[in-house]
Structures are given as structure tokens and as C-alpha cells.
Amino acid sequence: MTLSERLRIYERLMRLDKPIGILLLLWPTLWGVWIAGMGKPSAFVVWIFVLGTVLMRSAGCVINDYADRNFDGHVERTRHRPLARGEIGAGEALLLAAALALTAFVLILPLHPLVRWLSIPAALLAASYPFTKRFFAIPQAYLGVAFGFGIPMAFAALQYAVPPVAWVMLLANVCWAIAYDTEYAMVDRPDDLKIGIKTSAITFGRFDVAAVVLCYAAFLGLMAWVGMAVGLGVFYAIGLLAAAALAGYHYALIRGRDREQCFRAFLHNNWIGAAVFAGIVLDYLITPMG
Image 1: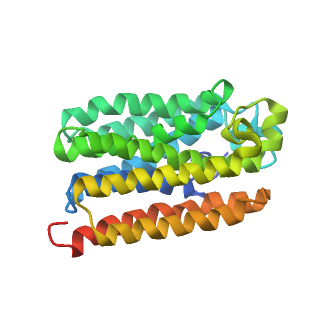
Image 2: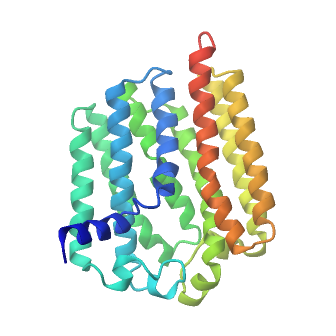
């Protein structure tokens, strides 16, 4: 195997060719960075968190495929993944994940020591999430904690502490993750039922669409509270209203439970994260004392 062929396999294994996962991890991290930095975060800190997000998401994908290597071949959407096809060995995949995680850890060394301490549970969450699908009825909630842990780390980096508002933002991200990853799980439900993996789509059953809507509502309500707590104003409210409109569109997509439409709704969550972030940035830029 040539070096270029191996790098292409690594790219697919890390899902760099499918950046939606990176974006869904990046948006809540950036919400935290901007609010913790009161609209003026250090460019150096922003760079560290953006690059760290890419590295940790890539490591998480590798670990996920390692954990699911005996299942992915039985699922239509995942049967062509490198580990499922035997294009790369399990040991090599683990070494790649370790190298990515170590590089991410080196990135945060210049930051406040609290960030380094928080990186430990963050890494444990990322590594253990793929295995929760064996026993946890709603692994999407665990994913939400893992995907939102950049929020308390951002506050630790910029404020040297993790105030209550950061944990509320993390809880909001858990609600959002349950919503969008249930949409994702609705795509794979027939395959997951056959192989015995647990997902929120299976747990919620016929109430899956209602659960998604309620989780979106909880997410938006918690983020509205965050805006009031930190003094964000009208532009942030507009961002949340835009996110709510997008969530309504997702309801229209998933209510028929068509697999393609559910996957389309999942992918579209990038715009919800972007709408909230745009509201935060604009509010700090335009609103006096925002």
C-alpha cells in the first residue's frame, strides 16, 4: 500500500471527507469560547479550540469505528468503512486515535491548568461513547456531554473557572444532541434492531418525532436562559428564533419517518449551530454592553 493510499484510508477513517461531525462539535465549542471571552476571545485560544475540535472529533471517529468494527458491515450506511472492510488493522487504528488525542493534548498545554484537568474527562467521554450503544438506552445523551465538553473547557481557558452558565450550556447541548442524533438514529433503526444496538430512536419508539421536538424546545429554552444570564440581547434572540424556525423545518422533514429525509434533517443541524453562533457574535459586535 502506497503512502497516498494509506492517507486516503486515514481520511475516511477520521471522516474528514464528511465534516458534519466536526461542525456539530465545533459550534457549541465556539458558543462557549465567545461567551466566555465576552465577544472578544483571544485569536490564539480560538485557534487552539478549532484545531483541537478537528483532532478530537477525528480521534472519536476512529475509536467509534474500532468499537463498531464487527457491526458496521451489517449496516447499509456503514458497511464500506475502512475497519469494517479490513482495509486497516485494529491496532493501527488505535495508534492513529492515540496520536490524534496526544496532539490535541499538546495543543492545550499553554492554557490554564484547569483546561488540562478538564481534558481528562473530555478524553474519557470521547473514548467511551461508542461503547454506550451496548447498554445505554439513550446513548445520544452521552454523546451530547462528549460533544459539549468544549464549553466548560473554553470557560476554563478564558475565565480560569467554570461558572454555572457553562454547565447550563452543556445541558442545552445534550438536548440538542439528543434531537439531531435521534434523527440520525431513525435512519439506521431497522439495521440497529437487527444487530441489537441501543439508540434513542429505538427507545422512544413511536414517540420519536415528539421526543425530537421536545428536545429542540428544551435546547432553545436553555439557550434563551443563557442569553439572559450573560446579558445578550436582540441579535442573539434573532439567532435563537432562526434556530427555532430551522427546528420546525426539521419536524416537517422527519414526521413521515422517511430515512432519507431524517438524514437530511440531521445534516441540516449544522445551520442551527451556525444560527446560534451568528446571534452570539452579532450581539457582542453590535449591541452596546452586549
